Length: 227
Ligand code: ADP
Image (cartoon, rainbow, N blue to C red; front, side):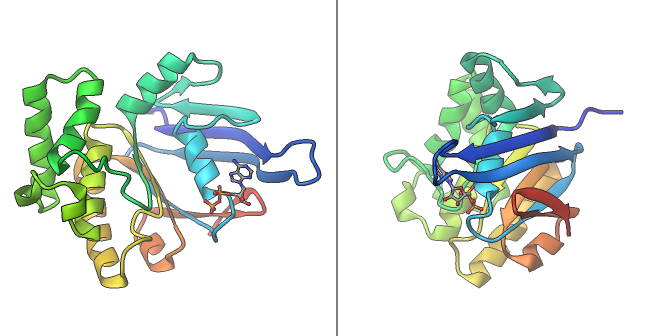
């Protein structure tokens, strides 16, 4: 059997440890995501969704527990190796697009590929193909400020997929959009994910969107429970 794309075991995380304002955000969390599986992470604001996604995406480290990405135990790995894995195996999407304002849509998708060693021409072709897939190829030369909120998020999706990762982590990816745009942009995201066979962990508090994923899990008092 194939390794899970993401496996978390016994993950715990506190902030302000040992101080009166200590808060235990995650308690002994186990989670495994199979190849091609799309999982909804549902919880209200403040429950720890971002903390969990950041740990899964190697942007933060747990106090205890193991993170495996594509079968590789990331515990104790060097910063260099963690950066490499994050760059090539993990795509991240935030609620706000976080595109680089001084670069065009195309350049925002090309840059992570150059950082990953892809030649310029190949990176540009892939960026154009991704923009075409999400229906905004004619906007390739526009800077983020000249794009609508929905278009900015579509560019952010392309950027997350630029290096063809196996795992997509998304933190309220349509939470900043009006309901009609949110539905369309979510359709685009699911289309991309299903087309590429990606595994994804998508945080949302929108239960209708969550119901369209393969499985839903909820964070309650720092523990993961099935919905
Ligand atoms: P969510 O994404 O579900 O809104 P977060 O993971 O951002 O939740 O935060 C979970 C809890 O941890 C919140 O109470 C938040 O205030 C707290 N928290 C998050 N980051 C820090 C930090 N760096 N220092 C202290 N507390 C934090």
